[in-house]
Image: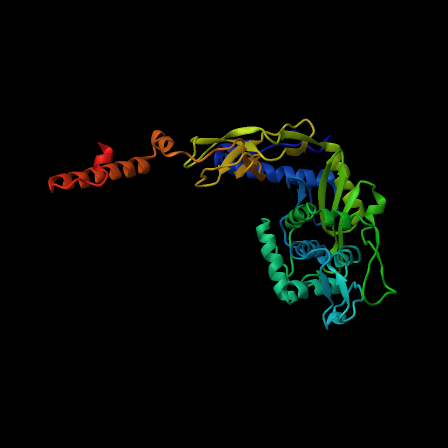
Length: 418
């Protein structure tokens, strides 16, 4: 381990600690010490911050990432994600009767006004329109409370552990909190959607709407897009209790990182600091390529007892320059995998991990076709049920034949057999 702060003496008491309390606790202590030192070295004003590799979700640096805080309008990343999940781009959404009662940033929707889901996405992510979020919530689930439940369910599915959404827009609510880590997880998922990426990198958009034709231009609140040509999103947020919050994205050197800042004194400067540090000190490496054979998986009822298992897509990780990570892999084939199988068919997952808390699943595919076994093949490969069934049929036939002969009658098929 090398000190992150040059010119100052750094000691590592964790080695002494290891001898007393064991390797697991020592590893956790060492990791905490590393994060604390890194926080000083990077130097951001945000109370909570994190920067992650967008492709794998692997954390490159963090500062107090697990304290729940008010997210303000960065909430809308999840709102937009649910719109993408539940709506087609050309779905027509009608503004509810109470749309004008929603406060804060607004698209100035009028009751009964109709806008497509795609245009609503632009309004949510560029202008940060709270009334557009409310309209989406009504359309998808019938109300803000029901929509918040969907938001929390989706967050749990993504692995978020300290998220509690209570509304679709982020207006301050004591029960509406999330952590920087969880926000980064949601942002990584959202950036896998092409339409989401297209919207958040857009600086100005002219929407089509059925009413209020004098208000059609949407200007992105994300001023960082104009400051950095490598920036490609994502969302600003501010309320007095939340302070300045930001979820950002930038792509350099062929890979993307996601940044999250919560309660920042200067979010633009903080974001630049995080991005410059991340890209300067890290590089991307291909750990395994799609099609690479990783092992075999057992197959039930197949012409072969096992099938070759191959990686379904490239695994590329972002790691510190000069620090080659040891990435372990564990095959997790589906239980009860049965023939027939087609080449390229998904047969399970492979779990990659770095031993430092990061873990990610990738698709595991059949490297070859496996046909269903014939009766003879099943018997030869230890198909005990087949052997028992065949023996039972032969024994039964023999007994029937013997009884018929003892009674003086010729059994069915007697003459054909002879």
